[in-house]
Amino acid sequence: MQALEKNNIKGFSLFELLVVLSIIGIISGVAYPNFSKWNKERKVREDVEKITSLIKNIHVQTEKGTFAYVQVRFTNQNDGLNVQTKGMTMSSLAGKIYDGSDIWNTDITSRCDVLDDTYWDTDTADATDDIRRVVYNETFNFVTSNLSIGGGGAGGDGTSATVGSATSSAVCFSRGGKFYEANGEILGPGNAPFGFIYLCRRIDSGHTCPVSYGGNVDIKEEPSGDFEYLSTIEWSRYGNFSRSKWDSKNDRWFEE
Image (cartoon, rainbow, N blue to C red; front, side, top):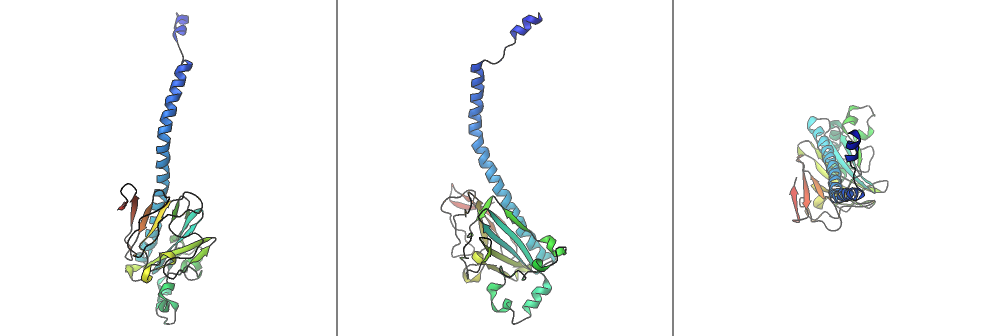
């Protein structure tokens, strides 16, 4: 009886096995591109969300009184977007405001400084100082921006700072929006800051988002060229932050 049962047990024939493998191959061929696309978009979205959090966090420090004036500095490098946050205490800011000869009062474009390593208190503070614990210096490898790599600033007075082969641009905030300045390419017409930065997936080394700042600091432009997952992080002098995404099907920006 046992021998009879053993004889009735059959495995897959070679033909059946080939059919199963073919079906698996077809399913994988359909599913993998969708998974790959989803995974790329997920990585970009995570980087954009983290950068947004860094900007929000340093602005919150002005409301808490940790700093009176803060900066978010963007450095578009060949293989990563570096984002640094910096802060100036109330005593340091007051010293500048009440010193009539200080460049703070004679050149508004110098306020959001990206050149002087001793300008920001968080740069000169001791490593164990509490104010060093609320600023960040992080590089994001999955995204790039519209900012130039290794070139001079295109906006405002074109002031820029070089970090390796990359150019830095920045936006600066204060409590209640009293001071609101920018530097580099984020410095727009009439010395007003552009209210956003463009971000997209980094396709290869040296890639930048194919969209430029226009003549209005509040209006986002339409992209041109090769890009994937284009979005913006938007801000205002009063700390209102939001994100928008480019809808390629309908050629429009929509708020996320």
